[in-house]
Image (cartoon, rainbow, N blue to C red; front, side, top):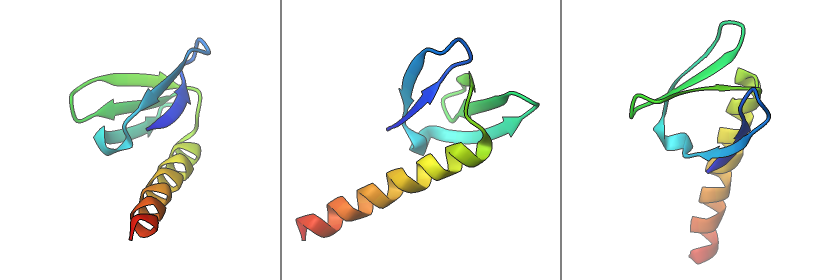
Length: 66
């Protein structure tokens, strides 16, 4: 899960595996494969970095478990 902020400052977590589309118009909008959309404070670049960090942490967990 990654942490994001809605425009009103409310924090929430989202499963990055469910993210289907991210657009900036100029607000950043995340659309999930379940059809939900979220407007967030983070830029597309920040979201990409969070997803990369999330996936790297999963790989580390798999490696640590042997």
